[in-house]
Structure formats: structure tokens, C-alpha cells
Image 1 (cartoon, rainbow, N blue to C red):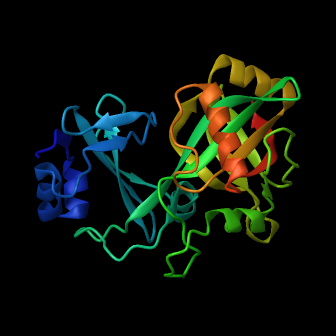
Image 2 (spheres, rainbow, N blue to C red; image 1 turned 135 degrees about the horizontal axis):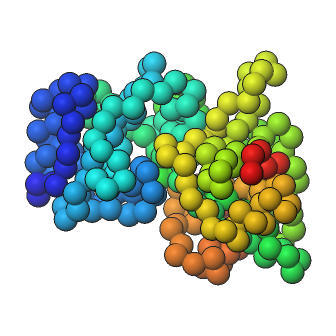
Length: 257
């Protein structure tokens, strides 16, 4: 089915006329998508949708956004920024534009009740399996990779996770910008995940984060949590993921305000 897509001239120039036409015809564009700006669901069959191409030094990622959130455009980013927001997954197919199939790291904010007190939390879940760098195996290595970085397995969501030194959550002007990890060889922190556009958080979340000066970061493999519309449902999903052994977590200092 044809899509209601905007494909800007610079995007078309990058991906080629043939791939652009395939997108418009619905052959290679998803009907449903998560907006790369506001992170809420969209439908390119019924909603005006923008194609956004993120281009790094070696990698390009085609994303979709509500036309009211972002215009169709090419966004030039560093490879570190791109890899901080997107992790490669094992895939034998690529689009005709040469853009690899990718798994995007989705991030949800919410308040988690632990020992009678509310804590600000982020829940990270990729849209697909995450492979180890430079491997082609089918195994999802997302949680093992995080455990190697210092995230701890969560068997019950009842206590505050241990602090992961060198990592932090960047909040600026009341908006969520990035999760930072230590730079290589002890250099400046780099983005492990970075919002393409700063994400809004609730006033309650922001107040709790500023009070505690820390954020709890939970991570689950693709399909482990799902998009939950309410915090009580999010907590229930976290509890179920922990019971299945599919949850890791860490406490990170708050950077910014």
C-alpha cells in the first residue's frame, strides 16, 4: 500500500531514486513505526510521515518521524553518536540503498517504587536482537554485553541497583539528552544512547531525579518489556522480566538538571 511519506531531495540523493520510489510505494517502508523524535507510534499509511536519514562516517540509518515532529532531512552525526543510539543486529538483508538493518534502542522514563520511595528510572529495550561487534551469529548478546560493562542482573525489582561508576544520565533544561559511558582510554564520556531530539520527562520524574541526583537504568532484550502506557504496567513488566532472568540494571549519577 502506498505510504504518505515525505522524502526530501537530500534524502533521495543519498538513498537513490529507486529506493525512494520503493519507500513511497510501501515496498520497503513500514506501515507502523515509532517516531524517531517523540518515540510514540506512527502509521505511514494514514499519517503524514517524514523520512530521516542519519549518516555517520561508516553507517547510515533510515528512520521515520511524524511530519509534525521533524521534516524529512539528512542528519550528519559522528559515528560515535550514531552507534550510541543504534546498535547493529545480525541481518542478511540490506535495503537497496545499502543501509544495514538496525535495532534502535528505545528508552522509556518512569518512576519506580522501591522500599516505599519513588526513584526516577529509565528502561532501555532494543527493537531487535543485538549482536556482538564483528560477529554474524544469531545470538542476542545485549544483556551479556551490558553485564560486561558493569550492569548487574536483577532477579527481583525491590532494591536500588549498584552504582555504575563512569556512566551518567544527561538531563539539560528539564529534558533527557543522553546516557553517557566512559570514553576510550579514560577520555571524555561518550554517548551510549543519545536522543535524536531531547525527550520530555514528567515534572515528577524530573523532581525525583534532581532530589536524588541519580537515575536507575534498567535494560531488557527485545520484547522483554514492551511499550507500557502506565507506570504500574511498566513496573509489572519489569517484575516479569526479572523473574525470567531478562533484566539488568545500574544506578547512574545525574549529569545536568
